[in-house]
Image 1: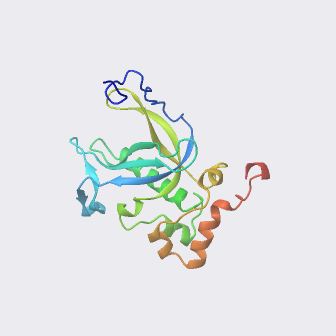
Image 2 (image 1 turned 90 degrees about the horizontal axis):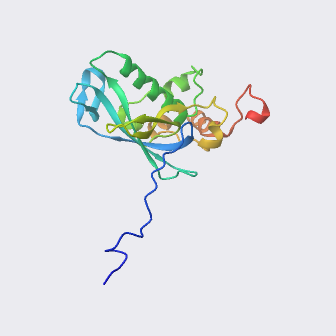
Image 3 (image 1 turned 120 degrees about the horizontal axis):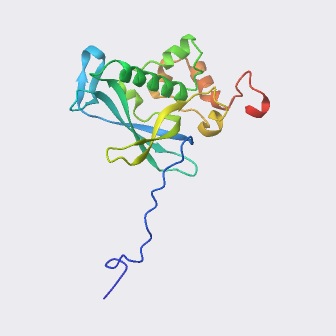
Length: 202
């Protein structure tokens, strides 16, 4: 006797279309612990991963939270160290800074004490669960196929930031470190027009 669960000829084909390049998405970042630590560099509690080539990175997964692509997942390696030189690690630090700016609604040029505190973490564990706005790009996987990744965090000076981000949720460690009135202001920042932009761009 034939049924839908032993004859799959009429099953719908899976749809694997990638999220288009340049799409802005609100994502939650999860760090998959790789078990590698290096106290000299502040890489504690096994959050980092170390590859066979000696490269060290954070294995990050991003889940889209809202909109047309809600629940879709993207993956990116955040560089910490490469035997080939400092560039990958510098790119990783820049990416994490952008994530913290985006997550905490910090303007990239804001160098106030509160903003500087918002760009500090105790460990990579503080990044686990961070919600921010990212820009989708494509790169080749190990099989030469395109895959969607997050390479660029979108910060509050971007005209579409507020639309995509909505209300900001500070990391618990960030909120605890900030005075209550500053944390409240940061949580409202995503809904406040960006100074210097015309009304149509706010």
